[in-house]
Every structure is written in C-alpha cells, then in structure tokens.
Amino acid sequence: MRKYILSVLFILLATALFSAGRTENAAAAEADKGDSVKNVIEITDSTGNRVALEKIPERITFAGRASIMVADALYMFPEASKRIVGVGFTNQGNGNFTAAIDPTYKDKVYLDKSAGVEQIARTRPDLVILKSYLKKSLGKPVQELGIPVLYMGLENPRQYEDDFRVLGKVFGNPERAEEIIAFYRNLQDRIVKRTEKLEKKPKVLFVYHSSKGGETAFNVPPKNWIQTGMVEMAGGDPVWADDVSGNGWTRVNLEQIAVWNPDYVFVAAYKQNVKAIVKKLLESKQWENLNAGKNGRIFPFPEDFYSWDQPDSRWILGAAWLARTISPDLFKDFNIEAIAEKFYKELYFMDDSVYKREIKSRLGW
Image (cartoon, rainbow, N blue to C red; front, side, top):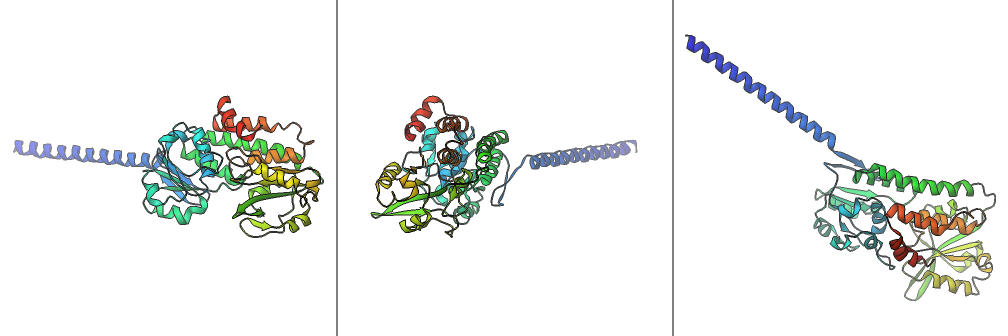
C-alpha cells in the first residue's frame, strides 16, 4: 500500500513538473513572438502602401524608368552602397552618376529601364524601390511574388522630405534622413525669405528644348511641376503657368513665346548640348526681339551628370542658381559653386578630387 501511494505521488509530481515546463516553454515562445512583432519594421510610403519588414533590408533593388531620381535619393545614405544589389538605368547621356559614387557599382546587377518582374526577381531582393507611377504596371506584379515594394514620390519638396524619412527607416538611419532634410530646408528658407519680399517679379520662361527627326520644339511644364515651383521659389513669375493645362509637357510656338515676352528664358535640353542650343537662340533674329534676347538673358540650365531643373535631388541647386541669376543683387552672397561643392560633399560624401573630376569638370566652372 505504501509503495502504491509513493508511486501515485511520483506520477503526480512528474505530471506537475512536465506541465510547468510546458507552461514556461509556451510563455517563452509567446515572449519570443512578442519580441519578433516588436522588431518588425513597418513603413508607409508616399502612396499609402504599407510594408512590414522583419529586419533592415540587406538586398535592395531599384528599377524602372525614372531610376535616376530614386538612385540619387538612396545614395545620400552611407549604407546604400553595401545594401543595393540591383541598379536601374541612371544615364541621361552625360555619364552615370551612380557608377561615379558607388565603388562597388561593378558588382551590382544592372537592370535596363525596360526590365520586368523576372529580371528584378533574379537579384533576390528583400526590398524593391520604385518610382510611384510604376505602382500598377511594375510594382504590383513584383509584390505578387511576395517581394516587398516601396514607392517614392520625389516630385516636389514635400514629397522629398517624406521620402527621405522613409529611406531613413529602410536603412535604419533616421538621423541621416533628418540631416538631409535640414540641408534642403536651410537653403530653401534662405531663398524664400528673400524672394517673398519682392514687390515686382520678373517674367520668366522655362523651356525644355527637344529635337526629333530633325524637328525642334519648345515645351513648358504644367503648373504643378517642380520646374514651375523652382521659378516661383527663386522670385520669378512663370509666364506660362496659367496658360497651359494637362499633366505633361506642352509644346509652345514662337508666337506664344513672343506674347509672353519674358524677361528671362531658361533652357534645358536633356541628352543634347544645351549650351550650343542657347548660343543659337541668342544669335536668332526671332529671339532677339524678346526682352530676354535684347538683354542677353537666355541661359542654359546648369548640368553635371543631370540637368538641375528636374525633380531629382539637384532641384535645390537649380533653385539656388535661378535665384542668383534672376536677382543677382539680392543674392550677392550666393556662391553657387561653393553651394554645389557643399551639396556633393555633405550629401554624397565626395572628397575634393572626386568632386573636381566628376562634377566641376562637367559644370565647366
């Protein structure tokens, strides 16, 4: 009888210990699960798209058209070179800026601007970053493969700030995002605080000069594009803004330009020699009748690898240059070359030799 009682007590004790062990293991598992949930990185991009990442991505791919804008935002973060594995097309005809600033560029997987889902998937990314307008055509098919995708707006100053903060989360470096934003805000504030006090603003025309099949054309941007905003920020009156509609470039003829009769004309010509184009305009009988032509105020937009007028990271340089050109007396202290050098050294980590070789040589200053 005594042995029977001891046996029962032993079984009860063993059962209690086993149950306690299971309870502790379950509690530990729940705790681990809770910690895992806490460590998930949740990011909402400019389109409202939400992504949950288990860890900071180590294999990032950017692709599609307008990769220039995406790349130039990404590479402002020191972690970009090590974590980017797939690179989109980033050459507008004046060299590849991404290759110039990424020492490991030759080790990346290059993706043409027409690259599709299969090519992107072959880079084995744990995150893909695209321009927002590619959400439906390219982003959705990539997401259907189970690959997280984030979208960048990068079309105006506000979107740039939002997108920098998104990238701060992507790279686990929010402090760097705030440093970048501070650089832009500081220069933008210096410009706006002066130009907003101007009582009379000069009439300004910005045109994109295009050529196809031997036929040339002048095109103006919509009112809500960054080129228009840059002219306004710099203290100019964009003469075309209220006369065009649509969501893209509008072709204009010389008759319309003559009606506007701008005081300043600024010309961009992607993939063409913009300085040669402006030289011809200044020599043209048709253009010399404009106020801008009479006073020699037709200017090529500065460009290094890319023109400074685009919704690229360089837009802040374009705005500063416009302000200095339109109102030289108001911006006597604006040394554009010094501002550009500071931009590339602080935001892209360039040293003197790289800046002189890659940027200053292309600017021709």
